[in-house]
Each structure stands twice: as structure tokens, then as C-alpha cells.
Image (cartoon, rainbow, N blue to C red):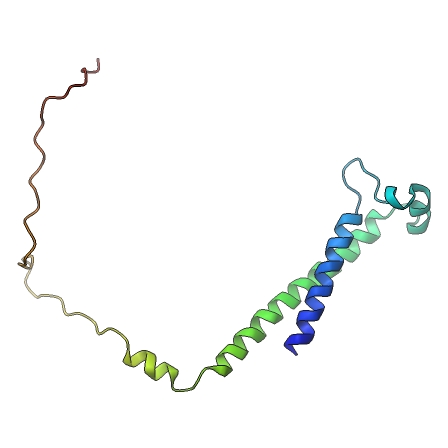
Length: 129
């Protein structure tokens, strides 16, 4: 099933690229490379913009559905391939919660004391007015 959806996904993505390249840009004629007169009569008096934009919209909806389906099927296949005892192993490897000291005094350790507030020393920079 995943393989079929991937093939549909690839074909639809290529079709979207082709249709976007065929569509009329601002100030450009979509059928200029195919002969401007024949493209207008083939797609009707309204031109190719309306037909191509509707086809592109449908293909984009199919592309979105295929992308979503591939993501769901890939997640299901990964979940199915994991051994059932894996969550128990992960829970056994979890780091236990550390206990907090009950007193409000900071813990004494091998760390040095924090330096005191810096004192103001004369600077080489001129004073700003």
C-alpha cells in the first residue's frame, strides 16, 4: 500500500511542476513556446489559466492527501516493527528523579564561592556629557 501511494505521490508532484510551468505568468503568454494562436483556441476563448489552475488545485489536494497518508503509513510501519518489550527497556533505563534537599540553605560542596559584586575602577574612556 505504501509503495502505491509513493508512486502516486511522485507522479502527482511531477504533474504539479509541469502544470505550474505551463501556467501564465504576469505579462507572459502560457502557450508562447507551443504557438500562441493554437493554445488559445485549444483551451477556449478564456485562455488556459482557468483550466490549468483548476487541474493544479486538484493535484495539490491529491498531493497533500498522499503526503499525509505516507506519513501515517510510515509511522504505523515503524511502530509495528518495534519489539513489544521496547517500552519496558526504555522505562528501565530512565534516570530516577533526584531528591531535593529539604533545607533552604544552599548545598555545600567543592565549588568556590561566587565572586562579589564588581567594584568600579577608573576607565580609560572619556566621560560622556
